[in-house]
Length: 108
Image 1 (cartoon, one colour):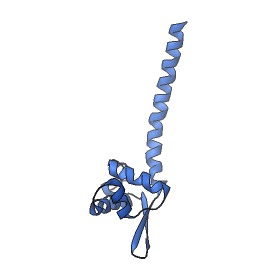
Image 2 (cartoon, helix red, strand yellow):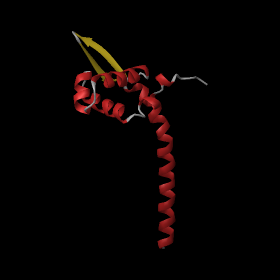
Image 3 (cartoon, one colour):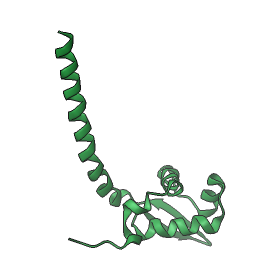
Image 4 (cartoon, one colour):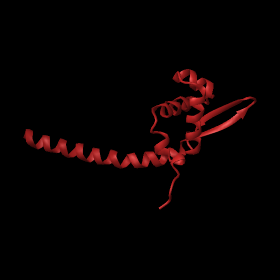
């Protein structure tokens, strides 16, 4: 089994609602820490700490343009999260299909 440092775990990185919102904002276009801070209404140092967690988890890329650092989503690491969630989607889909069948039989 491969051990993942807590700082590199995408599940832990997306556990925080601010980080999830940052990822959502960066889907549309690259963002700076300042823009993210303004949108979220939190201090720039806090956003920088969140971005560090996201970077360590491999969920964002950073590129420097002059004095600015622009961050963008790197969604490949989210594949692990999506694959894990897919198991539960299949589980609930099967359960709901069974419920629908049961209710149909009860009506008849």
